[in-house]
Image (cartoon, rainbow, N blue to C red):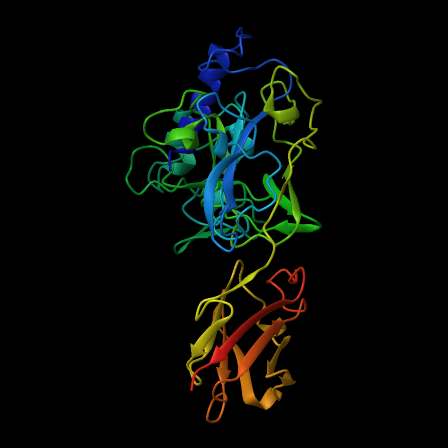
Length: 390
């Protein structure tokens, strides 16, 4: 990940460079007039085969906005089946944001409740460098209002065996001694995803602000190199079958202090009101099971092999018992089978005793009480049928 100060300096230079630019037609131009606007959103969407809807696959699409070079199947406004697992969003903005409020840098030890600190507005690479020097020199060089990685604990900050007093420099983490921090991360609470009433945990280490890029599609990276952009990575799955929207902290602004908004269809010429993000929303795919052992309605199934079912999202292990089985139309006693999770998204039904009867028809029913880890259940009961062999 690029150093945060490089991003901040790039931000300042880019702001100066586009300050008088209002032509949004050029792919290389930013649009600093008015509030910062969400131009495009890239995410992974589940596509179903037109001939066989039981076949599906993920596709990276424009879930908001478009691009003149995009194929029609790459543009999917109003996504209703966003992939629940391992789905990162790329939020492409029409101008530069204040990077100091988006990311923080790594320090040599905890400065408050962790070892990351914000970079003060107005700080330069020289300020970072003078707080990256050796421990014994820090007190004389890392001073002033633009100093970084200062201890903010009343009881002091432990740096190795030394206790650094409150208000004194802990030092920037700079193992390679290049005068810049060795690591950055997204600031907690800066940007979030809210699905229904659920705030989705964000992976702060894999989320970041990239002030470079424009509307030109480069050969390397393609549409996922458009910028400036915020890369937003959920920390784990998203809750299934819920509509989601973006949430920004109040200090996420451009150089004019204006908040991000979403114009209709990502059209920056149409404009939008400061902070109004209502034009962009998407829905996560529902929780669905799929047989991994045999095709639905298959015959000649082995009487002792367990039945495996994959799911579109990890299941809550406390809510997997809503399974019933019938044998030739008669309920199979619960003692004849067990339900367990082999992996978070792989459910197994094991037949106890001598196994199932020969040449019998079995129907497995999964109740809506089976849920993902956010307590979002199956939209409706799912059934699978198979016939055993001799």
